[in-house]
Image 1 (cartoon, rainbow, N blue to C red):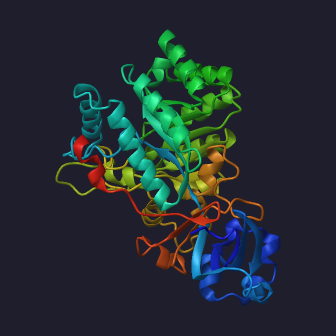
Image 2: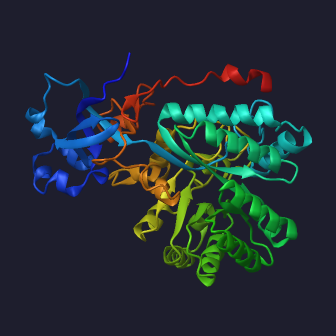
Image 3: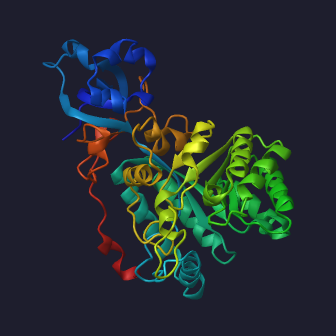
Length: 444
């Protein structure tokens, strides 16, 4: 049965941050219920024509909709948002927990588990990588994700296979998910001849140059080298920074200084930045100011950081592991929330669902009461950091890539998994059946 090319979705509530202020109207909020005012939800109706949003009407104008001549989908006051963007994942690591679990739950245990799985056991062959990575894409697509940036582990013996799998999946899934790749290596590698050749390979891949920043002697020189290589190849940069609870770990500060020192004009993104939350307030504020000046985007990974940080055997963790998202946001730094690892030694859970990320991030970082515009942290903000201006938005003329929930308020949205959501791609409702874990049984 063909989907209609022209229809209306009526009685939905869209977060105000996604709606043009001229559509909302200056006096509308005076007529909204307390819940709609508190949650900043705009009650409206959407006209969908040939896969695009052709009209957005306030709920009061329902009489203008030709209900007798066009198909109607009743949203029943459910929340509607644009499709998600996941700006920090590790698809190549995903879904290996059951064959190489991290039984002590520590960061070192995670590193050991990945090394064992990839290098010692040699599991990351073409078939293994392809199927696990595609399993992650299937989950992401069914949950409503439109764009993904994945970091790819790049030991020399693995690069050729991993890049080949990534390129094939990027091509196969290009009509469903925009897929980006970031290199994941130690920063000193780029100061070698092999590292320069690797930068060429990243450029050939159409990827993002990136790596793991540590407080090591020569950090400034390593960062300068990466920014030079990136500028020469017109690449953006994406770093793992300060994924620890050591207040002396200040690689984010050094990255911001290096970006400014090199007049780097492309987008820089830093993920994790956990140690910022355990530093002296004046030191943290100095770094935040530098981050803002350098126009660096920050990605918080609430679930993985909660899972790994401050894990000590037989002791309750003393902190939540996340960075200073509120303070960064208050300084007008672009802050996104992303999923990070999924069912691997770094995080033993997850399902590539950005709603779960938003829900957990809201609860861990106290992003409620009020919710403000934090829903942008899993939609338009990561899309901006990924250089995707048409992702994570709702507007007239935009492609109708939307997620409709039965939840009518943020409280309802974040109190249940919302497994019955409707995902629209190009204006058509897709099959949201998740892949069966049994698909990977023979790999485990």
